[in-house]
Length: 387
Image (cartoon, rainbow, N blue to C red):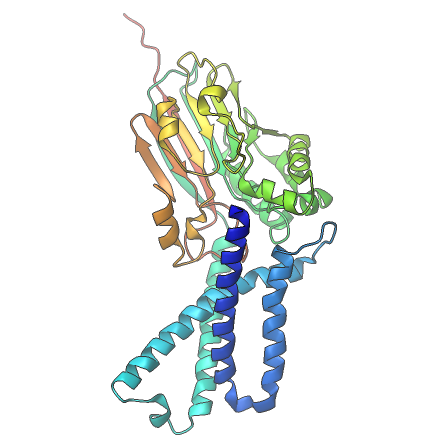
């Protein structure tokens, strides 16, 4: 029921935004006369293509990458086009309030509206160029954390963490290759994937063997991953998609942790929770073994109820999911939804880092946050010997 309500609300917002954008652009194109019909056909073809690609997909039907990219990009067109036109309407209505109508200020008002339309298109193009580069060329966020526990003979641990790669229809091998090349430059001891490695249906990733690139990852102690909500969203399109995704990752050298913990190098533990969308996921008390005072690193995709990790004695929790809104001004919403929607946090002795993600959902565009690889240097307390 919650899923149905979410879909209905999302579709209502999407349709309302498109109707507003369509009507205002139709009015702006008055000067081109009957050729506006071509605009109408193009507008609604692309707008409905997004609904078809994301809500009524048929199992086994593979959308061409170009269509997926165009339909996903339409979200950003709708968002920034609507915002730009809303600002114009506010200015226009303010003018009317003081008896200054735009039509009385310019000699050829229909032509002026066309120029204004062209200006909005130029603004959108600028946003897309900046946002695309920000989304597809990863940056490294360095972080240093001291854990007041001993980790065997280890003095430090270098972690490369990424979340929300969203591999599939719009993110493929070239993007993943850039991420992995950047990680390898860091020479980490361990690589952690904090959920949403797949963008829903795992079929296009497996069919194109995208994760063969994972075999190139440099590490000393392994590559570990957890499920995110999008791995399970894939079940809507193809039953068993999540299970196939996990098996495929395992075949490409990635250990998937689902409500389990593993001891690494006899020195520290990595624990991975199933996604919170899974009703039957285990509690932290059931996941964490007797850790003998060794450091515990927890992967939990969605950063809700952060206090649970603190109460369980976790030393470092790594999460993703939020994307920091991905597109301005949506980060203002995620900042209200989560205790921490991006960046570092400490509660008691427990450290947290919530990544804004390496990949994108929907449009290949980031105007809030950036494509992020988190490089964490953990240092541990050492055995002191009496002289």
